[in-house]
Length: 472
Image (cartoon, rainbow, N blue to C red):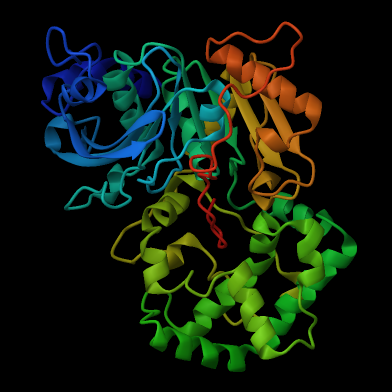
């Protein structure tokens, strides 16, 4: 930890010495009299405009920012990191959003942005294309390097947007927002982390085993278990169809090995994908019976699991995630009692199977416990929103005695799409009021806090990337 603190203390000096962008407090105006926000943004050293898109009531910019590949040694090269900016006003607070994956270049706003009626900066996670250094040194993909990416973007834009800042993200984005606060606790005025898993011990299956043994109703759990087993009993027929589908859709299985291996991984994921996204109130009745036709079984598996998921083409897009899962983040592990005697490749559902062997992976067992301890003992103005029926919430962040002005909310019956709007009335009002306070905005005297921006169907789409496989 002493070494980490020394590194943080010298970071500003190292970055200032390298011509890779704007150090804290750098000039961010285009000259005397300049008021156009685009000119002021592009006056930031290292910032480049990709395009501006028209959006009613906002300005929307797709940008690239020059970042060091290695923040510890910024002189050793740079890469271009993509981000977007939904500009409302320099007099409004700003939300710093990340999905933890690619950034969408379609204008949209997160729930906190709507609640505080503010600006939104959305940052692509390093190593997701096109924000990937070439050549690629995978050792520079870790949570501290990514947190420092966010820190530098905040430093560059804070002069233009001096009001309060809120970090947010869902799933891996919620994890990312939390890690950012752990390494740079004073940048943000608050954090809202949605459905963020916290795998402090990647080998501990107990929380997930308990979740799948108790979630929903016994009837629904049994139905899912039966159809998973039936999917493997019909393995030969289904794999033949899978291979034909792959040929027709130009999909291959070089990384995982064969269609048979990919199919087994897909089937072991089905229970996770079902509870992660399917609405329990209606989806349980739609689980096929073991006597269903092969066409019905195929359609259901594709809906819940996605046949593209473990093809080379499906895996390539998420290579950075699988690398991080196998080096720092950890991943869900659970048992499959209903599939006993039917598995041909035990242990294959592991991140090491999804990253080329040419990329070394060594797991750091200290990373997640370090973040967990910080959240429990030092979190300030942090909010975690989880879903009762979301498997990722089986291992979630907890708040300890040292946490201050921080909250843990759960959406009853909620899945991986849980948000503030779907909380119980009292929790929703409380969460909204706290977020407004953190953003430096007034809360009604009667405490009935509501979103400050009106709903907009063009912008208010979920920014949580739907993933049917074991990706947060």
